[in-house]
Length: 124
Image (cartoon, rainbow, N blue to C red):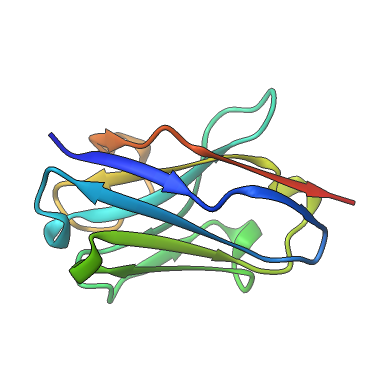
């Protein structure tokens, strides 16, 4: 079964940057769509970004467009989330997820595999 491990979270000041990584194992990574989701304290999990297996299609939630970039390196079985111009409202636990159908969609239900998360805290 696919296993996903996130890393790269931490504490940064508003306006700073972080790059999250998600390393995959146990499956055919190159055929999976990959997504990033986040869950802030007291809030429901929300979609952040997604990328198709070809890296041609990407999607972002409106609040991160122009600031976050999702990418993947299939040779390394890794997906990334580059986060720039961070805001306090970006504070959350960030999770990567894999969609075996490869589309890079935003719907939570499409993703069958999930990592354990990495914490991002943005101070003002």
